Image (tube, rainbow, N blue to C red; front, side, top):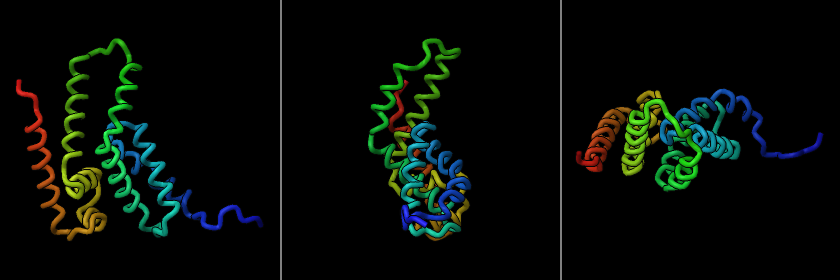
Length: 170
């Protein structure tokens, strides 16, 4: 038997198959782009493959890693150049242009406001709205389960303030 990689995880395929959709969904919720979410998933699973995280803890670890990686990407500003490149490739006729523009602007505003939140608040908000329980969010972010609700409510409040502060007056 030849040794290709001694450190390869034997559980990677099973963990990947069981968790890929959720990892992509969490990242897509933050980034608003399935393509970028899949890039985040690739990065997260690569990190997992190098980790010693037990397979039975993989789901939570991967979800948190996807959240942090997506938030970091969002904050980095690298999305701007990707959006500008894609803008020239879009369809020239859209059935309801006004609704499309408003929806894109609103999503962009929410993502920009999310990027301005303290990291732990943003992560708690994303994880909770991605379907994790209070206990799972608490474990993922090293919070007490009782403080998750408060952290999420504060994050929502700060997010609303950020949205209102940066709203265009019309």
